[in-house]
Image (tube, rainbow, N blue to C red):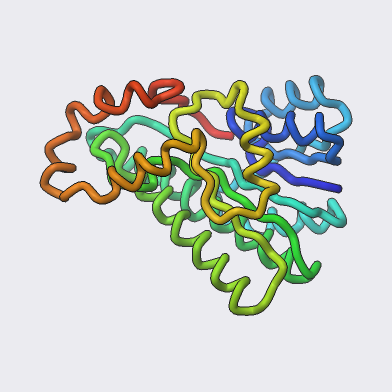
Length: 244
């Protein structure tokens, strides 16, 4: 069995890739930063590590070419992402955040979905974020991009069902997991399990439902203290920064 983890050289993507390798999967990963690619290759010489930048206009074609070069891939997990605090809603930060977290990840998902259509099936997943549930004054573009992915994954899932395709499409929704240490098994179970939406940790499903249904006025007023309110439920407080 062969898996591709896009954005697999660091963070949650790396935690997933490491678990897949340990489970005997033939695993390929992608990253952007040369030092991260070099480090991963040194640590896991049996895996294939290559550079894939999803922030540009050629992202979909590059993802498709990579899949074609790997041969028969059974599972693809899109874990690429970039986070940066932006309480000033600075467009110089917002624009690249949207380009990678929304358009770039969608390009990779679309390439993988099309690839699985040609193969007759496969397991497609994407690591999004609990931030996709509501907007956030601290990081407007990041949360909006993750909300876009929620809907895009749902659309692909419905598309597969309507066409009778054997393609599972899973939204993996982590909540404050830091760099993913100790979360590999949960990520792998989510990526390969064929579920629709998987929250990590699982209790965040209930918290997300409550948070998502807060009245707008209350949500607007809670931006100063909602991290304090949620702190008891966080495995690791906010938040990693950087590209994977």
